[in-house]
Image (cartoon, rainbow, N blue to C red):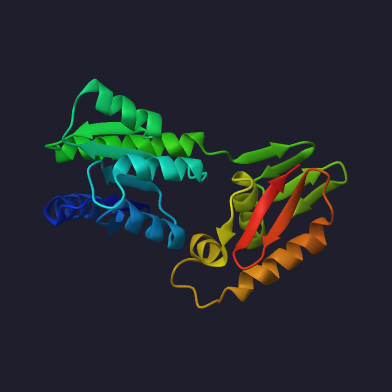
Length: 223
């Protein structure tokens, strides 16, 4: 099930979007401004963001810019009452993927959401290649000069997640939510155990490192 975050300060519009998307099977998260949206994104895996532009505290352009600068690649649909070319240019320069002007046609919004998610899926890599190392998601294998290692699914997903967004710090909570699920009974020490196993199996790689960020979590480093 795909997770969609709606960032909109008008609770009536937010409810309309939520009801429309939930009928199509999406799981919905809600925020009334950009700051609250960032809090949700830190705790949950979000597949697509729908954001208004004009909001208190942190507007849609600032939110989009912060996400792109932070390495988030999720598709973003920006919605606003403004329709001038300058406004659209500002949105696209901030990093949005698509743009709709209020009042929003719900059927068109659903089509755009579907298209953005499909595009993101097509664009997502099933293989990561850096130096002489290849991570193959389909076979759960790591291939390098020394040979091929098939990893348990959770360990592979963890390694793939870190190296797919090099230098981005992931908290233990983010990793748990994404790989083990929100309702998992495991605690954050599970992540530490899997990191230890990965390091033991892989050893030192000339192409990447798994870096512990004290007090925060982990990140992948491509050399």
